[in-house]
Amino acid sequence: MKVQDGCLLRCSYCIIPFVRPNVYSRPLEHIRDEVARLVDNGHREIILTGVHLGHYGVELNHNKPREEWLRLATLVRTLCKVPGEFRIRLSSIEATEVTRDLIGVMAENPVKVAPHLHICLQSGSDAVLRRMKRRWGSKLFVDRCRLVRETLDQPGLSTDVIVGFPGETEEDFAATCQVVRDCGFSKIHIFPFSARKGTPAFDMPDKISHEVKQERLQR
Image (cartoon, rainbow, N blue to C red; front, side, top):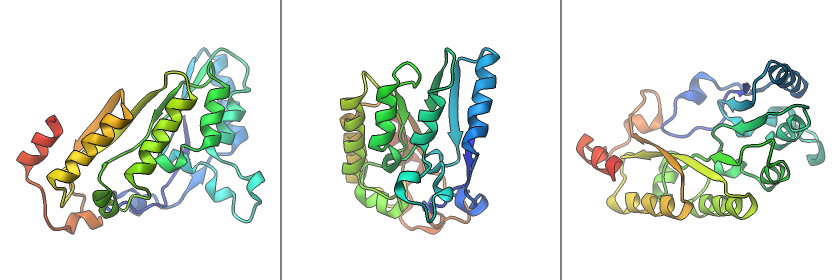
């Protein structure tokens, strides 16, 4: 079920903010009513998706006090109260959006929320993350994964990794491998970097050869 559209971030490799810059969150009550209908029709797992799922509600919170903010955790908490035998699963989310509130809702509702998070890494090298214009460093990412493991009962963690980003050294790649070990992912979507015309990364120097990308992908 798509609950959000658009992305405000400008990761240097991504074209989405240029083609879908307007952020929109579906009204909470509309989502709740649709979930109720799906459950009544026999559906047992509802996967919440969005172009930037973790930004659900952000455009509606301007000039409101923090206690009135609508966030992803608010949505999940509301959907957990829908009657019926079903569970909710979250699609991909950014590390900074794996908040204590969201993890808390998951911990409080172990039957209604699948204990799985797909947290996008892309690189474990701080230098590469800066060139990617990501919003955090590797330490924050590992800390969030550790908090999930400490709070939830045997959670599953999965991620995305881009290998061969322009300028990625052997040391940068080794740092990514170390973060992967530290986080203990159950599944990794691995992509060799592919330049998208119109993005800042398209014109970056120090391109990585196809052969090196494939070798790192296999490792």
